[in-house]
Amino acid sequence: MKKYLAIAKTLFKAQIVYRFDVLMTALGTVWRVVFAWILWGAVFAAPAAASGAAASLTIGGFTFQEMLGYYVVASFLASLDLSGGVSGEVSTRVRDGSFSKYMVIPASPQFHFLAQNLGASAYYAAFSVAVACACAFFFRVQPVHANSPAQLLLALLILLPGLAFMVCYHFFVGILAFKFQDVGFFLHVQGNLIEFATGAIVPLALLPEGAMAVIRFLPFPYVTYMPAMLICGRAGVAEGLFGLAVVAVWLAVILFVNRCTYRRLRIKFDGVGV
Amino acid sequence: MDQPYIIRTRGLTKVFRRFQKEPGLRGSLKSLFHRRFSDKIAVDAFDLEVKPGEFVGLIGPNGAGKTTLVKMLTGIIAPTSGELSVLGHYPNKLENAFKKRYAVVMGQKSQLFFELTPADTFRLFKELYAIPDDAYQRNVDFFVELFDVSGLLNVQVRTLSLGERMKMELICALLHDPGVLFLDEPTIGLDAVAQRQIRAFLREVNAARGATIILTSHYMEDVRSLCPRSVVINGGKKLYDGPTAKLFDAYQTHRKITVRFESEQNFADEQGSEGEKGSEGGQGSEGGQGPDHGSRFALPAGAQTLERGPDRLVFMIPRERSGAVLAELTRRQGLGISDIGVEEEDIGNVVERIYAGTNTRAEV
Image 1: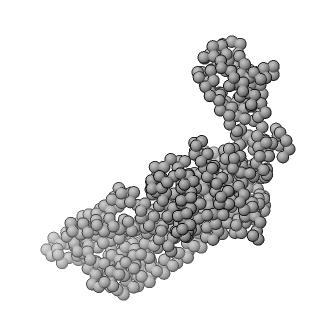
Image 2: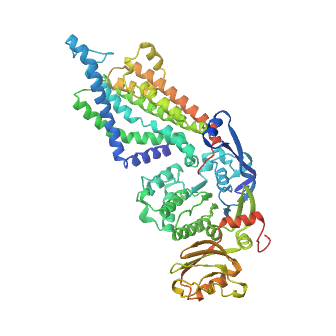
Image 3: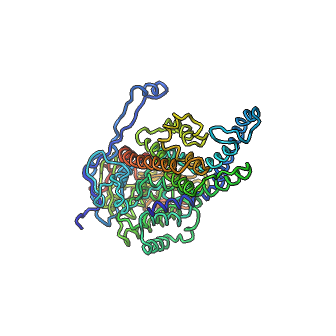
């Protein structure tokens, strides 16, 4: 455990060099909120003009201000998920042979990537939280409506395994390069689907009940959507505990699947270019 | 120790499967429906035994199978067949207990974090290898002093020169006191000073720390000055395994001599005749150019031109004649020679000679 903490700390330090990249990622939070303000402003404006009751109008149970509050929190949480680059990095390193650097040190490659990703996320969090606060102030929204500390604690407890699951999932896609060489197809298909399923694009509460009944058993809603709903006070402790159980099971499954897949596929590694 | 050998291979073989296709778009389209593969035997029934504390040089031209062998010994790739044991482990099981007992440094691959300082990476490796505080500090102090790089510990790796970076790679690899150190082209691309420093460092590590070192290098001088034992490999097969001195004495039959002139030359094509032996570089009879005012450089008898530039000539000469040729070149003032360099023959020639079994000075 200590060695993975050291990896996380090292990557945390390494991020400090990339000041421009960190700044731009943090500003991505602003963009999502601005986008939501424009889009949902238009959606709410039409019926409000017709009924003349703008403040009380709700869509999917959200008022316009609550919707913006959700986006501020969800955008902040989404900015912590840096796992998207893992599949690309792993597959590239497998293809060019530089993956060998992870094979010769006494650490599991999967946990190495997990630790380095969480280390980097911790650094981004410091900037993104500042930007999220600035957004909340600028748009005059109060995003935190959790009724009890238990909801906030649950949000954090779900977020951590949720982020870990995403890294492991992308690691899985990356190590498929041991067999398929090029995993571009997987990367292409997964990108938008997963972002949608995490609730980073629209609140999943807006989806039909049938779709939600299926999605709630998948791990993706627990990366952004459920923690955001808990923080916004729109999900209760029971839902949070259910989410925690679901994401914990998925994390255990993906860790096991990756372990088996890595053991099986790494035998095919040629180490070309090493 | 139960096991007299720290590394032992028996019939070790690695076969790579390579995709083949006909050239052009048509070939590419055909390959979509009909895949063709060929087998490339990179390492072929290789036997090797290395005792603790040995310093072994792996010699061979590009594609000989040296790096593939190192990759199998370190567990990076799995052998196709054969037996393999390193420090009592089967490397490709990738057990942490095994990884903590060896280190590998590849000349063109880095374990250092380019954004951070070497000291940051050293601290990470301390945790990765669970090195006790006192051992860590002792090793850092020892290696940093040996390389005289204390001023570079807190400098961003990205800004280090290639030689400085390689020194840091070596320190990083040795922090956990590995029993075996695999080095793949550690001096590649380095200048002569850095090469010399790294050789001195490795000599010390082998002698003082008792680390077993397996070195692959294209530089003859690396192997010659460091490795009492050499293993020559070509086409995946072992061609020679024995004392380095004996190998070079038997097969390195030529020297490469580079002569630089103060001005452009019109080299004579003909070689010096036997009668000119001892006066190589004899005067040309006509058309002399440059500051020699009439003297023209003629290739010494028995020499073979490797490269010819306007003010530079590189040739190969039998080793037993190199002394006389050098003496003659330095004696003659009228040729306008500005510099003379003498190098070992390229490793490829030596391996070719071993492979062909020709041009030896003595039976090995």
